[in-house]
Length: 349
Image (cartoon, rainbow, N blue to C red):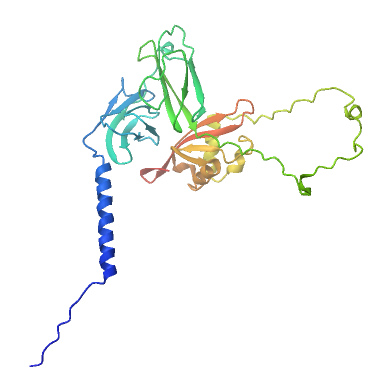
């Protein structure tokens, strides 16, 4: 019988070294992830409120520990980020909402709250009268104050945590993160004497670039002085009259109410208006910042989204908060809550 030759198989040396290198790298990656991993564990969301009414402050707390960042979503197109496990929020519309908190971008927990319609205020004297700015900037102090007659105690919460931030009639606060914040004030330690407001916190504007001094052109840095001045003597250059220049006149934008602005935006959905139709109210700046359901867009982008609906009948709800410049009356920012109706379902942009 003929003898068969046995052929052996072998792995190339480079392949073996590559496999060993991949195994070593994988080992170190797994070891690093194991060392830095934070187990979620069991944690819950607790909510506290007096009656759970629309317009009432609800305080949320979580039992999660040893984390550095809590991202809250309140189920009404508004969110907040805190560095502690508590936050305060007020719902504008009654309904059932699912609150979500995500810790350090990983572990997530949920809780459902039912918000009832706000009761009719029987005694308006119980409502504190607070001065609340419409907008602020990250890193810059903003001042809040109360003018309630007979007030002797104050508890301010400025919307970044659920803790008491100040206990004086007037208080200053510096926000650390942008977004729409809920500010609440309790007067005389009486939960019935509670007032809330909402403030838009913007990201800081970039610093202007420093002006560079003009560089000398050629000549090796030699400055040539003319033998005779080429201009008239100083006393001949002075003006003959000393009348002060008139200050520049400030042109104010036409006034428009919140209800009128909402009606104009619905006309965009019907194709009767566009972004340019609002130029006179925005002082020709169609790229002002708009907080649309918690997301930052420009005013032109907002109008494009509304125009895509093709009909105002598809708008389920439209609420607008105007932020104006006091001197020019120009609208400089908007807070828009917009919900779209599609068949029997309600869809959020």
